[in-house]
Length: 152
Image (cartoon, rainbow, N blue to C red; front, top):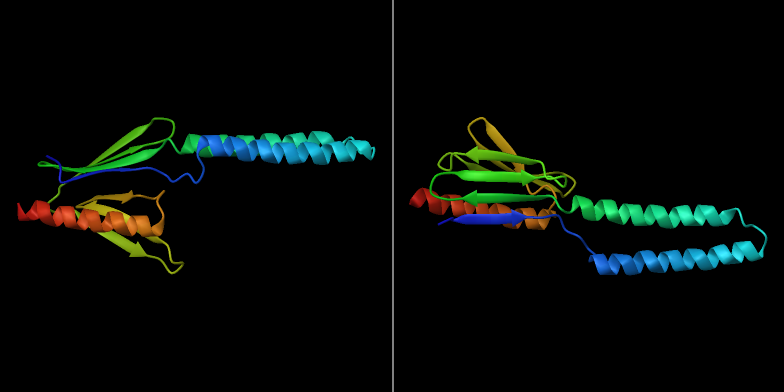
C-alpha cells in the first residue's frame, strides 16, 4: 500500500474544444479584416494575416503537446520513487531512501517557489509545471506522508 501516490500534470487553461473555438474566432476576425484590406486594394496584407492564424494554431498545438508530460511521486514500503515522463515519452526515474528523504520548499523573492526532494546525494526538483500554491500543497502532502512513513 502506498502512503503517497501523486501524479503531477501541467495545467492547461483551455480544453482542446475551447482552443479550437478561440483559433476559429481569431481566424474569422482576421479573415474579415483581410477582406477589408482586399476591398481597399491592399491585398498583400492577406498572406500575413493567414500566417498569423497559422502561428496561433501552431502555438496551441505545441502547448497541448507539452501538456503530455507528467511526474509521479510514490512512497511505498521500500522507497520513495519519482518518475518524470517528458512530452516525447522519455522517462527518468529517481529512487530515494524514504527515511533520509526531505521535502523542501524554497521560496524565491519573486513570490515563486521551488519544490525539492532530497536524500543523500540525490536531489530532484518536483512539480516545476505547477503553480506556487499547488507546489505548497504538494509539499504539505509530501512532508505528511514522509512523517507517517517514519512513524511506521
